[in-house]
Image (cartoon, rainbow, N blue to C red; front, side, top):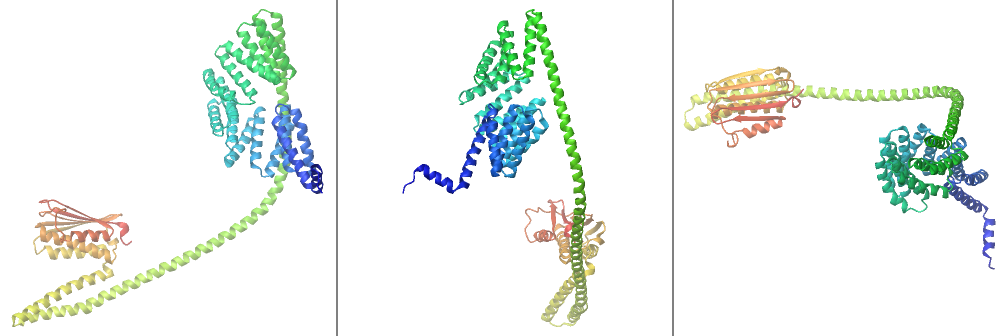
Length: 623
């Protein structure tokens, strides 16, 4: 059996009531959000829609519907002039969006609240909301909101008279809106920048900005208000430049748009601008008509500032035409309006004092709560102290364990070093006592056999035995000297260096000197360092003795806190280090210096002697 479409829908609604409620909430939420966009021009129509949404949200517990309803209601109440209730509703909406974790709507609420606070000259509070919106816009990478935040910050700076910073904010807002292709908000930022230039008495700069905006606004749809605002800014610039005919034309264009849209406050202000301009052009009759219209409309909508300005202009107009009666009348009206403004200021101050009083009462309640929190905090603090103390004790135990293990390792290492030195001493003593005495015996016996040898062949063999045993004895002596830990300090090495130099140079009648600077007893060398240091010295002395033909050799040793330097200088024939043939041991000397972590420098010229300098950095020596 077929079911008619309407009957089918009815059945679905009956069988699924939850879905029905959800759809109803969605439709109502959509209506509430649409009402928000109308709240500026038609707040009286927006509020009933928002209140309907709140009633529905209360019945169903729909937080999101409630949040949008409070948002629309608060925005409409602001444009009705109900500041306190409007701010309270916006604050409720913000809290609900935060509970819903809706960062986008929370960010938009911060911006809207900041705009309202600016309009009510609460600049400090407005700055706080705008900063929170700016932080969220960075997190969400929302260029449009960031652009609007910059525009509002520019307005704040402009109201404080900080025009330089205001210009920077407006330009940044324009750049961001362009990148987001948001032409409507781009023109708003640009016209705001134009106002700054007017306040700085720079009408030409103002016109340059307006000329950039004009073609953009012209191509925008539903931009009547933007065109009127643009014309108004043009009129201000022309008026400042004394181009009154152009100013009058622009003011009248804006006036016509505001009249068509029934924007009474803007109509009153524009009539005031037209009246001032006609007065400058000596068109007294037309100026009087527009100024009277401005006063009448401003008075009807309770725009006291506009009424006062219109009365002041009328008094000036009648004074200029010698109509003293009317001049006196409008001066009295202006003064009475000034008194009203002062009374209004007093009322605002009273409201501020009342708010401060309420805030003080809340502070006292908060103080009582803080005392309870402090008591709870003391208990919690004691628990934290106990936990921290336990952590510190554990850390100290770990540290003590680490130090104990490290000390054990140091003691074991020192024991191994002591055992090694004992072994070196024993080896040196055994070599000296056993091998040394044996080689000495061979050498002595070979010498005695040479004296009694009969044949030439036996003599040659015994001669080789003597030479070889002598060389072995000399090498063994050096090995014993090198192994013996008693010779580890540099001053012991220097003593052996002196003995070697005397053995080589004295038979050749070469004078030699040793110059020592520093305490060498504190410098210790390991086995390889001592061997390389000594061999570099031997090679340097041997080369000078064999090849230089020198008469004098000077050895200079210098020790300071950071290095040891050895320099061997002769007055011989010299040589060219770049052309000298390998095999004279120079490359070996450089390699030994490198292994010691030092450097070897050879300086020589033909006929000017030679100098060899060895430098060893202290951190390569045994401490």
